[in-house]
Length: 196
Image: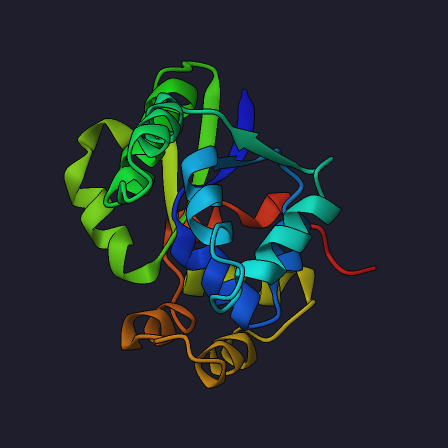
């Protein structure tokens, strides 16, 4: 069975960038996929917090990361040509579901982990019962705890504190998740590489 990690939301990338922990994603010994629309959202305005760090990080690790082309992004780029004021609104989320459908739910041989923002994980679980046993939703806080416990390369609370100091609104949900990871997050542990 193929296992993969999907980063389907801009928020975990921004939180990890502002917390100085983007490389934590690379501790996962799985192919890592990011929808092109999500990547575009977080890198198009390089003056926004974390954007330049994410852009440079992806460029530096292109061999480990897969930017997944989506119809959503293709259509957005066409619309942008006709109207430069076209808004991104909800397109990242639409591209996330597109990638999930095409590469996770639609692939019978796949087992996928989805890194999502803490506030949105509960909503994602409620929205799509098809996710079932094939997809494990892991929040940013839960992910950081697993990296701390298994890979020993960071302290989850330190990352969240630094992200907050750098202007990220780290919610109580993220802080709680960083203390009590769910069983879905624990399933990621065998794919984390301990620091050597």
